[in-house]
Image (cartoon, rainbow, N blue to C red; front, side, top):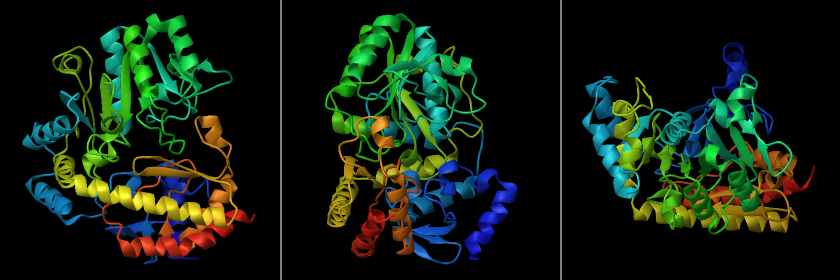
Length: 428
């Protein structure tokens, strides 16, 4: 038994499932989770002292690579001044200004601690602004674990939300309408039938939580048009894509429409617990203390997190994004060539530098498409790469992440490991 096996057994005694977030448990791929003790650049080191090329990147924040010296220094300097004040700080103002400079439609910004909190607050703000109750979301899009957004799709093109988790009441989920992603006809019918009751449509800029599903050209603009026509708001969830796929996130890459509210997380906190929502000033002014929509958080705008966010956004220049894009394209070619050589059905879909590998034939446009893949083949592929010290997201329904620290050495290790991983995927 390895040290990690022992650690996992200990963890399961005191933490539900042995983890603090479910995907970390390796349930979809089997085996013992990697317990990380340190990380630097493109690598993480496990509890047995083994290093891995990391393609998880803390699920997005590590755009610059792990433990970037300037980010670490900024956090250390902030920590020396105090860990938390429960009072306004200059760093909050500076980070909000940096966000607005990149995404001008975020005229005002409210900081929170998690992406779940950001989307939950965005929903409350939309309801407060419109006086309406219903929310529309898309099947396969994940917006955190607040009750109304854990609604799962039922049969048919559009359904009332049903609780997607034990502990979520039917009443909490009942005001959520779930539509298949890309189904403009269903979305139009929903608005024709209930437009006067809909407060907002929430969508990921480019969905990344059923695997990466790049929205069709004009799809997000259609959402914007429908919501505006019916007096509803559009919430663009960029907790994952924001500042990751480009200087202004997915909205900056796509353009052509302006959501009412946009949410940020991951990169905006540089790996520290921080998220945000932003929008037009008159809309954001509905939040307390100036407006009637209540939101609060003792650790919101934490000085260590804002210091990390400021440093990360300052360092994330055009050269960083160009490097990550180049490495992502290189890795997609490596994967595609290896899987093709091993005769493994697959499709690789990208949104900027983010991508997913689906073990199936044909494009993935909906959640049902994403589920119709060979997840057992992915598990074999995952473990082969893990044995070669390459650490992938442990699920077939996640995006892969590269960083500015992925150099030639890191890419060479992945390239060397890929043919065997492809062969493993091919053979049950």
